[in-house]
View 1 (cartoon, helix red, strand yellow):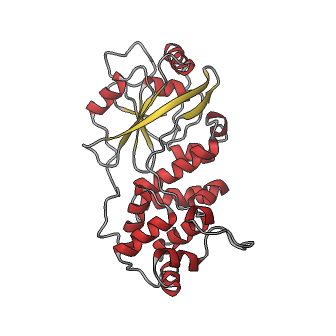
View 2 (cartoon, rainbow, N blue to C red):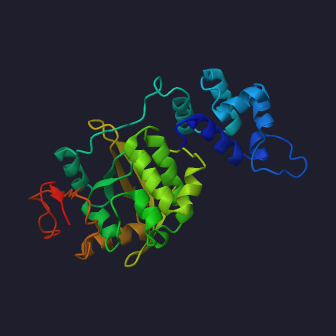
View 3 (spheres, rainbow, N blue to C red):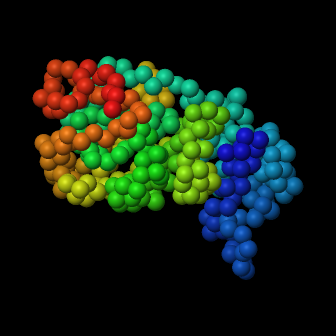
Length: 307
């Protein structure tokens, strides 16, 4: 992310991935560039070409709300992407994203995770760090080096390409989720982006698209070495007491093979193999008393777990 002209970088990226058909324009002859031309965007948005060029170059940094709404229509932006664009244009006036939030999980949330004993559930922060998992979620990822972050697992661990049957779609969704949930100037997010950009060409390519999406309403196709292929629907809930933290919970269609596979996993357990990295402390969601028989090696009472 270019700190000097974040809005310009966003507009250029969206222009390059918006097709002529999406914009409702005639195809015409061969095109030398992907996406739309600057003059086409300007015409569709009702501004001069020179003004739009200045926006992309960062020489015009204070577009009106009307101009931004027009650009959102041209690029077909989602609500999340439109909010992101407004924040880039005026970060102080649109500080709705999370920066520097606490990663502390309350005992009540940990107990709630435990109550979902038939559905994998976990807690993440705005950087997609995994802070806690329930029993079935640990069963689902047992035997993998999950790292401490969903993005690190997706882009740095080759096992993710077997775990996610639609890897490209999952990777794009996670990158877009990071943009949707984090303040552009958050140092922790910038550090994570820099780390992944240096290590993964796929991440660099996807981050450059400037996609913004908080949640995709479609099932995830996963592969587990014991349970086989699963189709799970994911829901996300914000934790009101701690802004920036979310609970992800997965469910299967009632009576489906995926539901039966989850039930088998719950009975088998994680198999004694830990998935957390040595450099990360992760709180366990299981309570001290009610679930002591499930995993004798797990720490109790929501305390931090050190490998």
